[in-house]
Each structure stands twice: as C-alpha cells, then as structure tokens.
Length: 168
Image (cartoon, rainbow, N blue to C red; front, side):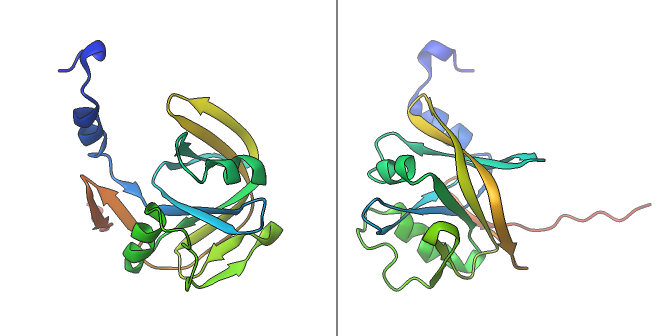
C-alpha cells in the first residue's frame, strides 16, 4: 500500500484508471465566437433538484480561458461509435469542430449530433481544486437517444454491458 507522501503519480493514475467512466466532450464558445471543445471523463451528476452536474479541466489546458469566460457549457455523452471524436477533441488539433455535425444550442453553443445525451448548462461555480478547475453547472436543457455509451477503463475504450440478474 502506498503512503500518501510517497505516492507515485503514474501508479496513482493507473489505480484511478480502474474506475470506468463515461466519455464526454464538453463544449462552449470562446470570446471570439469560435467553438471550443475538450474530451473529458470527469463528469458527474451532483443533484436532481435542482439539476446540477460537475466536470473538471486541467489548469494547463489551452481551452481553459474559454470555459472560464463563457458562463455556460454543453456536456455531450459520447456513443460507442464516436471514438474518433473522443480522440480528436483530446488532441491539440486547432479546428476540432471542422466537419463535425453539430447544432447551435442555448447561447449559440455547439451541441454535437449523435451523442447518447447532451446537457446544456449555465455555469454556477468554478473552483480551483489541486491541478484542475472544477465547474458546476445548472442543467437548463437536455436531450437523449437510445444506444450504448462510450466508456473508458484501464487505459482503453470500452462498451457498457448490462449485467441483468433474474429474480428468484
């Protein structure tokens, strides 16, 4: 067992990777009107009443200023056929939205088509926590479609499989 003062960051990252997460793209618009998006797996529901979600972004992200200034964001839960989008928005590619089918949502923010869910949010709070900025958002609108969501676990993309048990 690792003692807190001797934690190896790589080993910690590997251990945390054992917790499977959904894969999302969070989008907004920069002050110049350009769409901005990043791949994120640090997304969670906080409250149903009122409807609040959270996500976080590394303080060194080149996209951070856009999210800090926009006052709103969209979280899109990727479908299993959107691995290429996940990789694209995780990269430093400057034109991430080029050729990506999306519509304009609330506040003119880009909402990517084909996702299993999209949550359009007003930023409630931003808080520095360690090496990340935590964003809390109030869900103003959402949509969903049936289909399997893209997951990430142990350094690989995965597909969620229902483990149903029969009643005895």
